[in-house]
Amino acid sequence: MKSLEELMAIKAKMQDKVSVRTSSGDIRVVVGMATCGIAAGARPVLNAFVEGVSEAGLTDKVQVTQTGCIGICQYEPVVEVYEKDKEKVTYVKMTAEKAKEVVEKHIKGGNIVTEYTIGASQI
Image (tube, rainbow, N blue to C red):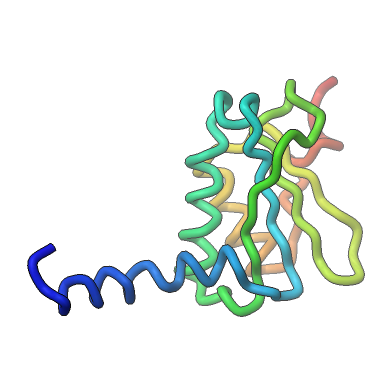
């Protein structure tokens, strides 16, 4: 970084990512980021949700956050989606590619991707 203009450009570029993490919209996406989740690949999943929500222009409607242990380590990475006046949806064994699909189909389109949910998982 060599100038104030360059710093301001970096700030503008990162602003959407910060607002996704602090939004108070109707949808909340929570990624399990305890040791087990991180070891299973939760960080790229979290980043994919933040980028997907930002790219879709949903930063005012969707909050993407992280939490500690969700309690089902064998299914990590785990993502929970909370929507106002709806039942929580728990996605399991997530990847960045699956996260992008969930953003497109569930968050943006309103259709739960049932094959990635805990109910569809073989116990």
